[in-house]
Image (cartoon, rainbow, N blue to C red; front, side, top):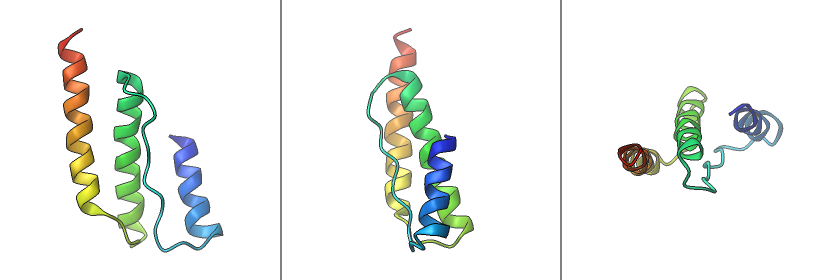
Amino acid sequence: MMKAFLTYTDELFIAKKESISKPICLFNALYELEIYYQKINLYYSFSKIFDLVFDEDWVYENRGKVSEEINNILKTI
């Protein structure tokens, strides 16, 4: 999570971008999905607080998908 925060900080204050990059999830393991969900939240919060251009629909859609995937994994434990 700290790496994602630092990346967003660099994109905003060093590269002077008007939007930050969307997070990606490389694995569908429970731990990775939980981290990805938090990165989506960080993307949303960072964009909102600094008044950046961001894809709000993407945020809501992916939060829902990741939540469903996490729940499916938890049901099988």
